[in-house]
Image 1 (cartoon, rainbow, N blue to C red):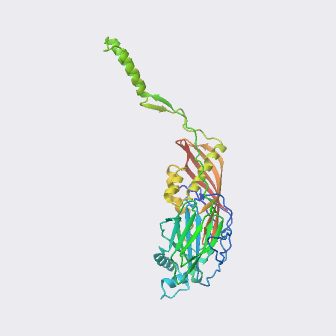
Image 2: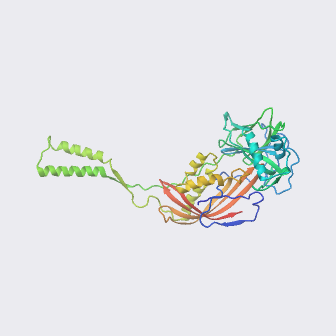
Image 3: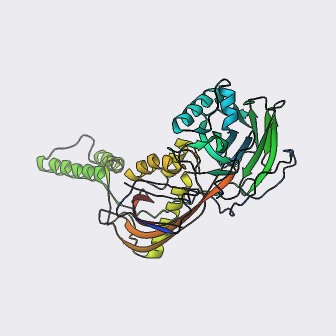
Length: 451
């Protein structure tokens, strides 16, 4: 199976020494990050409590890296929101402490000291049945459709969450309920208005931290107003344009006017027939010649058959030639998944990928780009580079096969902190011509190095 993967330091479980994975042939897709302009490393302390009005935002560094303290204890009610503004997507995340949520959902039930996996699922299902309309988003004057929220039990504190396995019990004083709403938005919205209706247990305000590019700001949503407004003001970096798909000049074929040739031959045969039979044409031969020549001109545009001399694409035998083709194709594959609407992802991916590989990458990468189930967010690539090491003729037809290496560095921000992902790949890819353009039609990852 075809793969392109970007694998991260998965919270604490992935904070290990560099690792090499021998794949040997093709392996099910793990991750395929998207391309975006290079962003600085994210490193931000926990959200301050001071209130800052949205009109005068307080610019902060980016979110901190994942914590390592496993003794995080919840000592009081928690209600914290995070607004992640990215090109093509805006994500609104809200955290409640599990004890408050359970008391609100079932006030007559005794709250347990820990939550088993079945209890966690039951709690998420009950919360989901009440939270469908809690969040709404408007871009300018357009109100966006409300997506189904993703709900999970999260371990830790806001900005300091810890890994939680699917079959793991979690102490109630370390458990939160996380809600995620993902909205498809323009690449650079001028203004976003978030409306919140989830006022439970008498709460009247919801602290909000907004992350956009390498910056952040803080604010609040009040129950009396219910809406938080974020203004771009040119601070959100716009995605870089897609790389131009490598093209080549198609040799012009030799055009043979078969229709005109047949007409002329037919006229010659008819002329000799008249000569042999000594038949005279009414009006003489001049009208016959005029009609014959006119017909030849008209018939020369019919049944024109092109004949190609040799290959329809240039031969690529040098590494530097292949480098100019491979690098933009791979870059566009990653960039396709900047988009979050399936049809947009597919359309951008089809610019650089063709054949069976297109279907496989599209179907497998949607799931592969998302963190584990409880994380629920997609990687954004901050840096990408590719190098071609060897080029050979494609044994199965036109085009070429290239052995290459590439590096992808990604960042995932959620729940107030970030996950870095850095991978280096060694793979063999197949490039074939298609109507004057080069397309990626085969990919076999040989080795993945996790850094």
